[in-house]
Image 1 (spheres, rainbow, N blue to C red):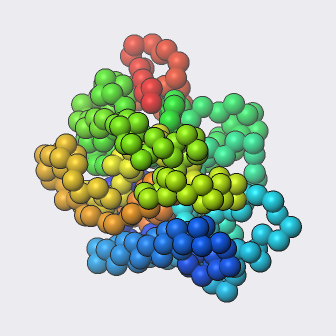
Image 2: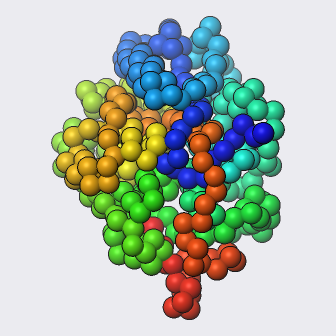
Length: 355
């Protein structure tokens, strides 16, 4: 019996990997202007991860986490390096993919994530690295028989897709804002939360109810504008907008730790515990709360204070490994062959999704 079972985003979650992070002591020895904010980020991140773990366990989820050697220190680890120290095992969804009863991984993430996954099951499939790293649980998602992915440019990479998706109906989509799970999220049959206009789903998810969330401009936040000029909109830590020594350090050494938070709407980046319970980092979004009430979903607040620094939400820092349920066909009228939603199709085959 496989230890992996993922067919959608809403079946009852039973086993989950939760990310981990360095302890504050990792940054011992750095100048105070740099060490103090970094230690605060690490301490509060670990506190929030522990709170998240307690919530998951309370809902009957078995949680596994990558392990770190807490004796290591940044200054020792970076000897002979001039920039870009790799991120810790915080976001396991980035380079792992669970598809039905199979798990795939790439050697692009912190090694602790791969070890955690293979310790859980030795049947994890390691795929070769390519020049395209868009194949992961943040950009590929499955709804029953249908799997959705971004366009493939590489012939080699397309062969990997053919191998992985041979038992599924392939749907090619356009995602113009990075990870798909930061743009839209099917939360249960018939319901989607999205920053993409509702009409884009009229045919691809015919009859599904879409809650459209505005992507508010960060430029309205004065402190953010101060920092944006110095870090190109990649990250934000409140109170450090004038700490140039810290800003330079993050931009130089920790570029791999951050993303482009200006593009992110974390209210979309949620984790469904089952069809009726959803982990959210913002419990105050009235529009999404009303949508949840309409669809009989209870929001479960999980503190995640430094999402604007990590550029990762509650979905990013987890990896579903096992959900109860079986494969279903939620779109039985679709043809069984692959569908490219990025190109015009005959009217009878149109399921156009432009993200």
